[in-house]
Length: 348
Image (cartoon, rainbow, N blue to C red; front, side, top):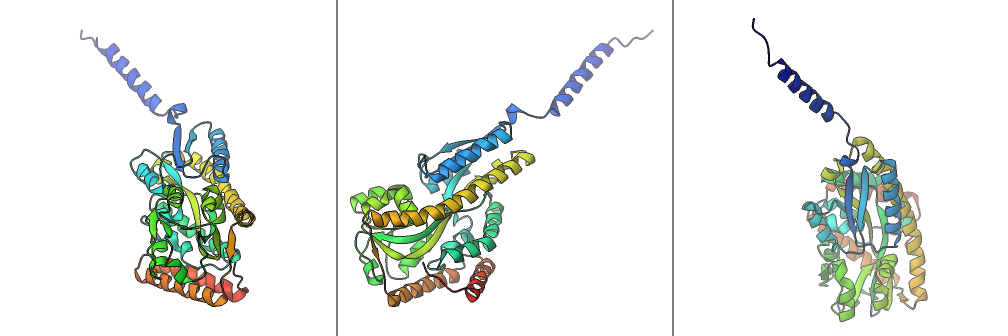
């Protein structure tokens, strides 16, 4: 009588297959943990680093160690362009970046920085409430997850000679961030050829005389110690800038959906705190600059009007180049006009 002597082997194989199938469905725990590598030029101890580290610690706790952060502060990974390159090749997963460094990826991110666009902090708050989400979604469509913007503040001309009108600018060696189309256009529109450099090279360039004028916010000048190399501040805001944490979207999607929500919640709250604190710090930093001997140069109404006309000229040039989305720019200008029609204009 024929007997199935190989049944035990078939039975053994089925057991192995069952075990393998079972293991596939066991949820990953420690092995699925992801450490996000984040770089920034912000020095250790600055508000940025304090708040981001606090948020990272809370995220690690809330996700049971499934999501961790490793920070590289103080520019040890290079300037923003170097950080972006390292994100592209996978050496880093994200960076705390200024808005000017993503203009080649998403040009509209620079719209807040158009010259002389804003006249007051009140205008900034109103427009950002209306427009921030548009830019956050725009960045995500282009491969970067962000959690809100942190104000850098109004940027001022800071120099070694008093700058009272456009002709004074033409005698200066003015720094602009490398690759910053808006800053380059502003100065070119008044026949000034600025010196493009990465932020990491600015201090050395001030010391050697390669440049003698910078455009930065009060907190930026103090945090980066540039205020020790200048004597004057032209007391009219040239532009507005901000920064944000951008994480590669493909990497972020490796996090489970539930943990993604936790990261978004905690980091968004952290950036709201950084944003609010930076506005307060900018006000205090401006006073600190004056107390430390920086001379504030007041310009006449006539000169201010001429500078605003220069800003309009530069904005028109940028608009005609088709760099920005016409729809987004029109929306921003519409909100700004609406605000000014219903409020008295306060110029800071």
